[in-house]
Length: 270
Image 1 (cartoon, rainbow, N blue to C red):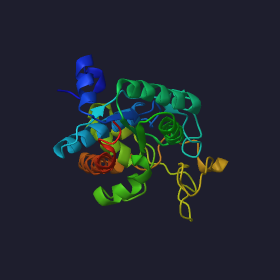
Image 2: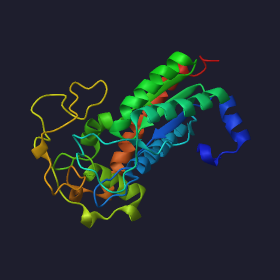
Image 3: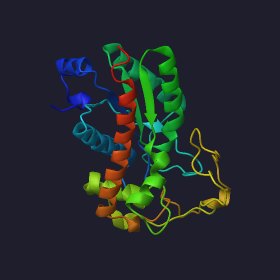
């Protein structure tokens, strides 16, 4: 049977709970990704990676339900996209945190005991971390955040080396979308763009994740020219082969995290 929550009937959900299955909630976004990728890129990617991880886990004997996706996220970091673009739909950090908690509490109420919040865009990290912390404090469930974008740089090096650094809407995301939703990619419209001072001379100066060494929420005003169209990187370096390898590598990392956590917690919460 399908283990995607929205395709399950009530008795099937009850059966999954009875089997003590964990559940994964994908956190996506609706935001511009340049002229060549759809605004749902983050949501499409995170759901595709969750499905890949689920397949790998099933082969290892771990059954996991793919829960309802939260398809909206907070406003993009100013250090990544200082200009607004048509099509983005954002939530406040507080509302996203509340949505994560309310949905998670409903799933916990029904009997799910181990929840994984799969973060699909950088800006959802902080609300997800706070929500997970409070859910663990306020219930007996174990809620774990899984933030693949935070380790994507390291994972990319092992699976698909692009000639230059890639960021929002760059070759990494474009390659994955060429596999997951090829009909939505208009590669000729992708432009190469790198903000001034995008590369930093000191360690840890990336996007401002919780737990990161340096949280830079703005760049100097002259870092982004008028030619900026929401892309950081070089989409022209994208390929289906690279996308396939990236999805396999990232999906395996997600599966490794869940399998490791399941080995610790399964059967201990009832």
